[in-house]
Image (cartoon, rainbow over all chains, first blue to last red; front, top):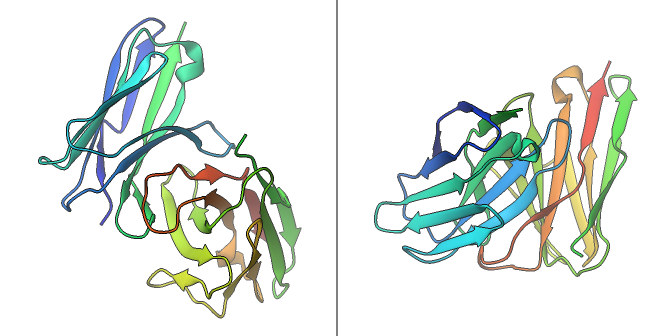
Length: 109
Length: 118
């Protein structure tokens, strides 16, 4: 089943922060986060494997609450280059991922 | 590292034509490759999972005789859209990973193929 992402879209000014949420109705083994720019391939950001695990990638970090079957992606001090559509992918079985609908992030100067 | 090459990037052809799309992992051995379809402003929909040396596993609703997948080596998987029709027009993306059994490794995506059937 497809995970639910929120919000669907967010507009920021450069330097502002944002949080993107991903929730599933099924138990999660892992959560992947990707960013896709228009007309391009998705780019891997990070994987979260354990409950409560938090990871960071430059000014982008994420948390994973295994019990709540939720993950959140945190973008701090956003840059123009952060614009794009963010997808969470939840592991269902055998390394297969089911992707959410995506969150469109726009960072303006 | 972890580069996936996908060709062609764009195909325009007549209805009834068969189209082959290649997906290659350039600097790693891809135990598993995935094929996705993406409509404009929509999510990535998994079509099939391909493991080297074995038959592909198709998702529910995906016609295996329509979308032929071959994973002949650890670096190459191909998707052939047979007798393509306008409704097959879409953006097709492959991804590759070194993991077979768990999602503890990232998927690395190709640049996608935009298929347009006239």
